[in-house]
Image (cartoon, rainbow, N blue to C red):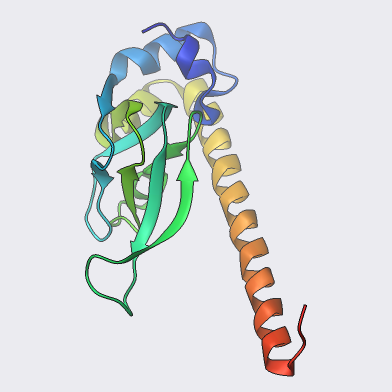
Length: 162
């Protein structure tokens, strides 16, 4: 694969061609079939995944229901990544990630990615800036959803029908 597919990854925006080549050679590209689990909620994972083609579902277990039931949080596609929280804090996954379709991924192991960033301070600066932007976007989206649900709950309690 050429670096062209990496250019469209949010995490790799504003990297030089040389930096993109370094990232590309540090990871690997593979495909997964629909239904394959990449990350399991509650378990530690060792990879950061970048979606090149296809889609993945991000979900959590539904504690109120049986073991097989889950709550879909979002579906992610080309340009998106998963596994960032584990990269940042090293804690077990807060959600599961499963291929919603045949999906092509670029994967970096967390230790290899950390060493790559340590070896190039300019690369590290750009990646962390991009990572911060990605995580802030997710937080903003979550805040909008929380506000919507809070308003809906208040409307339901007051008896208003919309």
